Length: 337
Image (cartoon, rainbow, N blue to C red):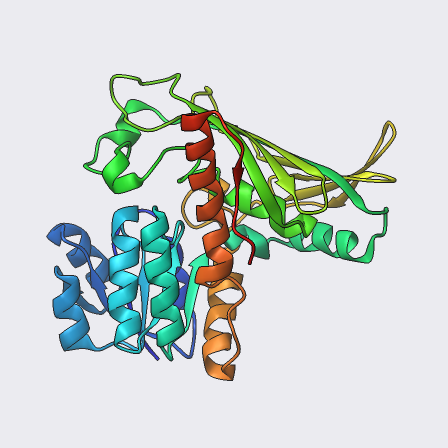
């Protein structure tokens, strides 16, 4: 299967390294408007460099594309590939507007190709273990969920032409960093979001960025339980993300890729993270390999990839609701599936 990786920034390395190790895949090309980036990746992975996405689609005609570009390009690039019957694996977020998400969902429906969103932390062993306990109700029903993300981004992080901009990034911490945590809250708890009350702030680098660096939200789930969500990139360190799934008899905690069982004052470690062999930044997690391999297995076996435009789009619907709630001061209700 011939594959093109589009966008040769930092996250592309996680994709390229996994693809390069897969026997069923050949990296046929890479694409970046910055020639030096494309040329460097092409030399390293022995493939052709393109500087224009449309030219690559016409000339290289890959079986699958991996979209690792700035956020505002995710929808148009995905739609172009799906329209041609080319499979698409897209980095998060799959869209940054309601209109874009609707367009993407329609393109997926009309295409014979597979579409997937990279929420790689769903494939972490710790997340899968906690989800299993929740589904079996080992410690009773879930009564609440809470999550915190305390990270740091300095001015240099926003020195390119798209990070920190409303038009191209679509938002800040809620869209780019903590979206993984927001998605995991639903995934591991098995909850469906009914409404959102949210607030966003910019407490750091106010003269440099247009987007929020801090978000607070309460998710009301369909069964009446609540999820509390706090995230910031205005802290001084990148600390492990914490998600607590509060059950009737215990708390199941994710801290990075570690998992803990908390009963009263007793804490038991359920899973210890393997902190070796990271490609890229360690807070991206190591789930890309499992996710990418599962995506290609879905293509080969012709089964649905579990994180498609509908499932992956739920995080988009949530952060858009957070922004709307913050703007209006009102609770925002989500459309039912």
